[in-house]
Image (cartoon, rainbow, N blue to C red; front, side, top):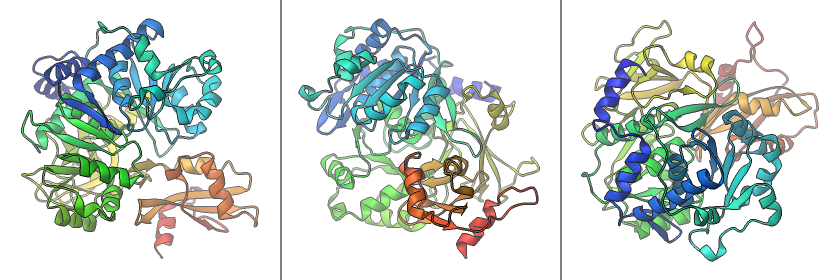
Length: 539
């Protein structure tokens, strides 16, 4: 850790909290009787969260034989089992690998093998794919749960005999078999807590190594920078953003627990009816959101019947806020949107607007206890009004990429600056505006899509000779994937290519538009020029 991060960590951690687990146990004791999580009508108190996570940790160590530092993948939607599994895993000294339930076989194989995961918590509806890939991974233990496990215990998932022979056990059975008390393991703030996989413009996706300190400091600096409520107040958050995504994870699995808040978990964010129902049922105080969510909510016929009088603010991230959407939300709800910026590598934190310093169309000033610098292509520091690559330094910046010292060295300097690959500009108020991306990354509904990954899949089609992927504006998802392709088969259809992609890619990565071409624009060295395709797309 560089000197700046050490100084900032010391400021954020004056009482020398041992690890996130110590902070968790203290919070569960302080807020024992408060509700911690609610999902599908079932509510879990902080005392129950502490007890169930202890039992789960006991089972993982005492009966599964998992050891400190082992990786456990968690592949679940927003259900109460998620925080139980995460905090239980940490209490057992394990490293959590957040895994998207929408991932395909190919994507899962890479993430599980790259992380070296030896155990998996998975939703029962995903078991078919799980069974197919087990023999190709190091995973020997699988804990299976259904959405209703805690809502209706009598319907909890019960593994079959053949599944037990494959090393599977029901999630609730594991908890029942765990000891009532668990002493825990010795952990330090510097210990690894999470592998949060984030793609790259070249090569396979990489695991951002987030330590207990990274995550703890990230939540504290965010809390102290954007003060939306009084300390100790009973906050209620609508947890609609996926908690396997770094934004939802830090907000609802960590932040809400450390500050005694209630998170209302929404298992299916595509079901707008369920989100509206939750918003009408709870006097919620804040939530995290993205453009597409705000737009979908405002289009719902019951939107006007929601009581927004308790809201202290809505934090928006994932992609740049569309001005028209932001203005409409604030006008119709009489509440404030606070646009922010962050990445997986910075625990979702970087900058954010605040009640005192608010400017729609920017992502606000740098958060406390951290720094943001813009550098030019020549490496010099940019002045206000000058565009440059956004670099972030602070105690929330990752330790590096798992097993990739080369990739780590490319993005983290010796003095601790993380090069984001994004281009920004500071206005005269010192507010950051995101104006471009150095990387060719496309953001679809708040999810990062990396063209090289999509192209690699498409090149696997026997009739594709050349292809290139770009992002184009889309009213529903912010951006959508557009594919330019050269084929040796005149009968190859767009529908056939889309079907091919769906077998290999999560739905949001599948091209929405396909253009067949005789040739693609290239540089003298033969590199396909995506920038020319972007211009072509605009014409």
